Amino acid sequence: MSQETVKKPGGFLNTIERVGNKVPNPTIMFVYLIGIIAVISAILQALKVSVTDEVVTQVPTEQLQQINEALGGTLVPFNLDTQTITSLPDYVIQEQTIAVRSLLSVGGLEKFFSGFVDNFAGFGVVAVVLVAMAGVGVAEQAGLMGALIRKIVKVAPRSTLAFILIFVGVLSSVASDAGYLILIPLAAAAFLSVGRHPLAGMAGAFAGVGAIFSVNLLITPTDSMLTEITNEALGATQEPLTVTANFYFSIVSSILIAIIATVLTVKVVEPRLGPYDPAEASVDVVADEIDEAAEAKGLRYSLWAFIAVVVGVLALSLPSGAPLRDSATGALIGATPFMASLVFIISLAFLVCGIAYGVGAGTMKGGDATVNAMAKTFASLGGLLVMFMMIAQFIALFNWTNLPTVAAVEAAQLLERINVPSVVLLVLFMIVIFVLDIILPGVVPKWAIFAPVFIPIFTALNVAPQTLLAAYRVADSPMNVLTPLMVYLPFIVTIAQRYKKDAGMGTVIALMLPYTLVIFISWVILYVAWFLLGIPWGPGAPVGL
Image (cartoon, rainbow, N blue to C red; front, side):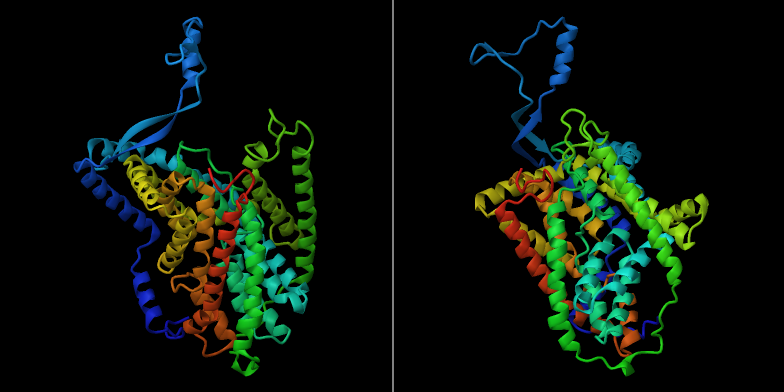
């Protein structure tokens, strides 16, 4: 598609596009950020900037016990104030002075060079993404994801077509590009097939895929990445989050926001578009040829494979003493093998179902085809892995300078003095992320920048990291369908032009603007209500610390 084909809106949106185009590649951006924190840390160390705060320190009880045993067990803890024998606490509160350390010092340069490999090797996001995408990639390459989307669209009743398309769009975030490349064109065609305006179907599906991207009924690779980045930012100061830390909120958000997007499609977008005139279509409206018999056979095979996986997981989880239960308490939910295995279990389910579909539909034969599908998926992640390498360095070096801790203590003390309710601060945080998404789209790189800064600040205000992560999910997605920097926006314009010859960037942005504003406002209201009611965000994930 030539640049002349896409009509550029003027004024404010043109300015946004020009500014956004100057934002460097995310990988290069993290290189710049490392340079910036190196300069800032050197200046602040020269100014002897430090903070003094009360910190919780873990008592090395195990080491003390080992020393005691080595000395014959003759040592006992004694409280000088009460003159009695006592027991050691697990944690003590100490006043500690924390100074900024310069990355340009001898210690900082040593940390940069000697820790480069370890920083990347210890960055848990990499392994999580590779494991998660191994199964999802096979399912996508085999054609299972596209077949499922086509099947759902085909059987959807006219009265619920809009909701089903939007809700499938929400679910499609589990399979990376499938929602954009398969569902959105299908949604336009599905609306046209029942006499409704195809651009309304396209807009609704685009809203489901893009504007509600960060939540799902399933655990997705994005959940894994956000959780691991959160844990990297937490370090050893708190218990790490599980991948289900926002699961309850994600389920409710997926359904409720999909309903809101459906109402917008039916009550706002369709009436504005009016009746569709087929004469407006271009000559490119051609249905893709699909072998329906082979696809149906593949779906049957994948269904039986899915049942087999579910039975296997239940056998490993439900019985007393099952391998995926906690060996000490017998619990299934919490810090248990089952919860730690969720990413692998989901990936395994996609892998087995993808292979089964490929065998049934004839799209994938033999072990070589499966390995090649994984290799193709991993090859497509090359740029992401390079970005992860620099994100790992940024987080490790940023934490080493003590800049996050110093900023967090100063900010927390300032916020305590002005006595602003934490819910107000969370709403302001969401607004900031929402606006920044215009020029900095991408759920992972933004969180990698903001997590090390804001998690310590909100932790000092007794706001749990899962609460901040939920706020980030709300703020990140709605602008995805509006920013000119969305990588799929030219593709969406192309789809629009198939049904309306003179459609351009402005057409798509005008269609999606109501979704962005209404979804963001509605989602913020849902978040605030959830926070004030104190509902856990997920299993074992309360609102406060």
